[in-house]
Length: 433
Image (cartoon, rainbow, N blue to C red; front, top):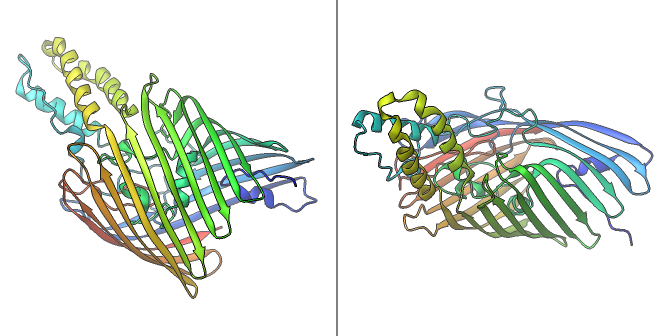
């Protein structure tokens, strides 16, 4: 019996008629809605948001059938923010994180207090960037890859979803989107700067296989400047999934490094779902640890270039001391050690489905950023391609937790103060073409 081989996210490439030698498809998702949220501070309560349930996108994918089980494939997928027409975005909340600069002490003999305050403000701005999604403004930020399917496997090259994230996404009740998505409180209190999972990886090589018995597997290696924001010295990951008989169960692992090869973001995910009659039941656990975030060196290098030009010449000899203290502070505050748990369900009702989940982020650090998220929603199909949805979510933050509800296209950002809850509703429309 012959095995079938599949490249994730491009299944439609293989749906061409048997007689066809080549096929190119233009596809996309247009998703937007209104969000009403309470995060405290000066954050706007009502917002128009692009990509609530699914990130809006425009893509091109294709295949050339060369016969004998050989196919050439490609996939190019661009992010589209419907509210602005751009390809970049930032946190949905205007509040800033407190935890990432907590404890920063720049009181140094000979350094004027005004200079110390100014430098602290520069550091605070550096860890609260206006743009944190697609900061390089890449055209095909979501996916850009080419591959070859052979009788012995599929080999893909480019920017792709990581094996660990595929398992997390498959086990997410809210399908990696909306205010109640599992990933909304996975990570530290820095939003995407302290992400608890690498979603995609630049400069990567991937091997994939799908067997007739429902077993799927993938292995990925990222070369220099790989990882989600293209700064890892190297990265790798693998997963194995069973998708058959109502089950979609998986185990995935990602291993990242910082710019010089130190252990970076490392995650292990066990998650899945089981479908029976009108029900689909979900459960999962996601372990995350990051001892050397790539952001630490990125911020440090940026400040090392900025401070000499922006400070009085008289304090130039103190800059190395300031940078050392900043680096020590960032290393402590960017450290991530947590386990996230999720349980939930879908229940089909006519042309729609009810969705509900509970997510817990259990922070193992002494100054923990724990949080519990409750989500409830209804998704109604108007047609095969168009649906509308109503989602409600509540995040109970504890200790240093500042998580705010987000969406598929952007992280929620932060509540005004640590320990403050975030709650809101989203109503939107999604059209697939």
